[in-house]
Length: 276
Image (cartoon, rainbow, N blue to C red; front, top):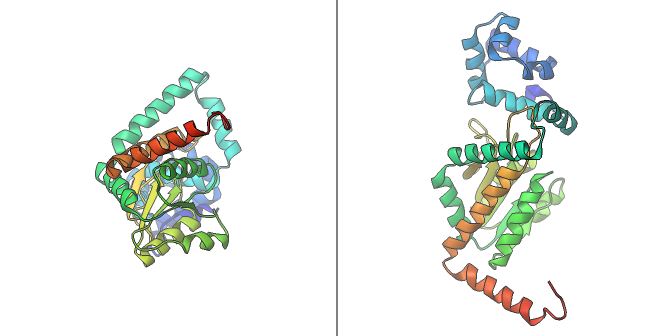
């Protein structure tokens, strides 16, 4: 992906802002290691100009701009190399860092949005899940848990024209869940657009608010997975998915536990044939 495509389109940028865009586009890796003061000095602009540009381009601040550029330009090998070089040197240190990310995720969580998500899923006649790459693990966990409650859940193909084979099953009051942690995949945009067109609720797990985007989900749940140059673990995302599952069970008010008891009884009936 070209860094240029990350910036908000249809905006009248100043000459100084075009200078910033040109530099980021030509030197994305160098940009990612530069603090705002160094970038401003390098380009002959003020710190305030760089800060304004970040907001003008559709980001909350300079830090969020860096995250988007990193997600759009760095490959998995580069992120892994950066984490090995600068990250925790022991399993304990790595896990402690994940605990910190969980804490940040908890602090940033919009409780009202979370409750709306749980209620929408509990009341939905069907739930459609879409995820690409590593996020597919989160989608599969959510599918497995919700199916145990008796919910009708379908995993939509990740990409290509087959995406539409799954999306077409969305109906009014369905919930369409998709994932876009650093940037929103085009398939996720389509899923959100289609959900709105048929009266379904769209739910997005994301690493940053989609402010200024032409397509916004009905509900956004923020997940913090680390800084741009780090290896991005799914620990926080999985934890938030599990929290949502528990909240859905509470919304179902006994139906979920009844289904689980039925499952337990079925397993006991056939445990001699199919041992656990």
